Image 1 (cartoon, rainbow, N blue to C red):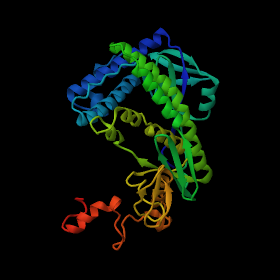
Image 2 (image 1 turned 90 degrees about the vertical axis):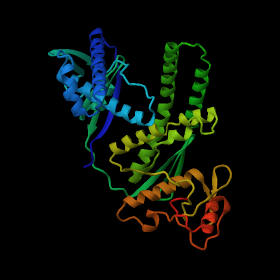
Image 3 (image 1 turned 30 degrees about the vertical axis):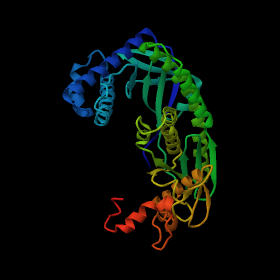
Image 4 (image 1 turned 45 degrees about the vertical axis):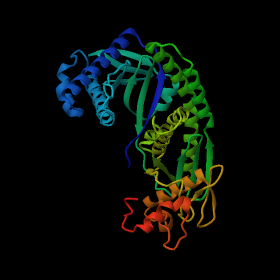
Length: 396
């Protein structure tokens, strides 16, 4: 058995005055915990609990106090990480009305019962879709905002032993998949790129110098953009997972940690280019693929993104750029699609996690033969290395 697979179902609601008061009190407790944690420079949940718990309202149920401490600990942890990278990171605080709890709530028939005070409850009617989704499953937690309630649910899934692997290469305008059975598929996401570009243009027309109004307007357009882009990503991720489930394939994706650092101001890139690349939702697509795959019991593997596009998926030699996102391998003479080549390399790297995978495919050879002809565009650095053999490979 692997760890439980988790999903969330969301439903709109109209919050009453009593519920708004509860959400505001929960937000206040989170901010109190953040202040105490910052004062004592702690982000551990256990340490923060011992320090902050006595300062929280005793009128609130204990599990709400613990929930506020847990959220504050996560916020403080992220703040400390961000502060190490940027010393001028602004101090965090909870702005939105919210509530999250793993305890106290109960589903009675078609109603969600939520305590607001000891032995005092509010009830929400769950719609047919929510009840159908939650039927027979374990509800783990509830999260509320003034406009919506989200219920997190889980099930135990047995991991399927992969019969092959499919590599998923995420690009700005498309997603390309290639499996170890030599099939490949490309999903067009250029519409999502156009939607984001259009909303960037609309927001750029806002000239009024008022921070509060700008925040409200940008928030409105940001929500509209998400509502249009998210269905496109969900459709693609569902097709990828369904295809992998049919073929009993594991899914291999790239570790793209630190991608945003490539598109910062001062890197010699235009403002429009940086805006397009920083709007690239590669992380959201990977998140959707991962949770949907784990729900179906499929294995998900992340591998380093090093040289996935440049390395020939046939012979392992370094390729040369051609035209129209095509690559040419000077060793075997193959003409390769850049995105498909990267997806095939990812699928091949996934075979390393298979105990009976072919050793030739488990890891593509990355070292050129000693007598190989040097290609100036690719191997230019090796000429100086041969002239100075004392230079180590790690230094070059």
